[in-house]
Image: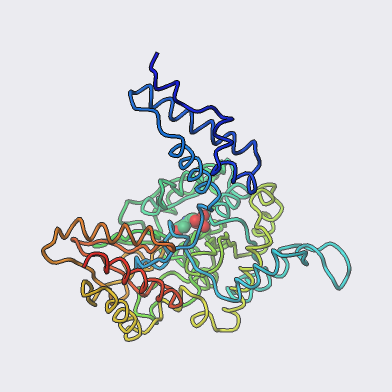
Length: 460
Ligand SMILES: *Cc1c(COP(=O)(O)O)cnc(C)c1O
């Protein structure tokens, strides 16, 4: 028997150790016992592999740090200096002050969620937001659910189960993290009939595929990639023409949910929800947290006869939106109603930010890098399933280290920024660490400034 095993303290001995005993003022004893057992097991396994028995203070330290890690929320704010404004991994759209206030107020207490205060009777959580949606998009009816994938799933489950729906082969897209829109759609029981080719699909391709089982024509916005060169996509108007001839509705999965004209900001044109509605789509589906700039949600806008069918489907309850995000979404839509969206919704403030102002912020940050950073020209991306390939000119803080093992130092700075008390995320391109102020909320500039001064100060 390995004598190291005998040196291992018992659980009771560990519980008496001052550092562990002190934890009992904050955590239940059963939890501490559990964490101590796990650490002792780990030590036992190490000994089996031939390692010496750790000292009691080392075991106590590990227990303490494991407990600290568990009780520190893994979900916490960070600073997005990647230059990708709607970064799915970093939480997509930051919210307006009004949306944040509304969400906080509604979460703190009771609300009119499903209560009509005038009549004193039960109401619907959808009534008010539906009116707003109709006003902002021009649609006849609207419904909001958990997210866009569930909106599409609900739509096809309610209207296309065991029926055929025709979609262009070039629009059968994967939206990231290996989620494929066609797979979500098939979950509904609908049969997707793909027509055309990857680069070209014409109105006649849809028309030729129509059978007695066809219930709708579907357009999916190729929101995260761009096919360039010889291409042809059928417009919503052309699709609606085909639909009219065969008495079929057109559904439009827009993805990004853009309500403002992106070309006014020097970007490519992103399909507008309003155009989809005026173009005659029976239903438009989009996200709340992409270009709309609100909380996560799936929004359905369109003709009343179809929206009502979705509203009554059992899945509608399974994918319903919660009161907190509903509050944020209403506050966000009110910005559009008031015509103030571009000035108060963070993603639109970032899109419309003045290049001179971005340069000024970049210069202030570069000045804090102990001579390792300078300001260079660069490009920001909107991202998050919108404007694929479209970029905005920006000014970047570029940090590089001449001579001195450039690669490893740049990696080290980037790692230290990620591990900063508020993590700061940039990107590395050819051994240069790049930070883009465009995707940073200006209030957070001073945190980056402090971090850069501290971290680059240690390299000098
Ligand atoms: C992003 C996207 C979705 C999924 O939206 P979520 O709100 O993330 O569920 C669906 N369709 C398209 C075209 C998209 O771009």
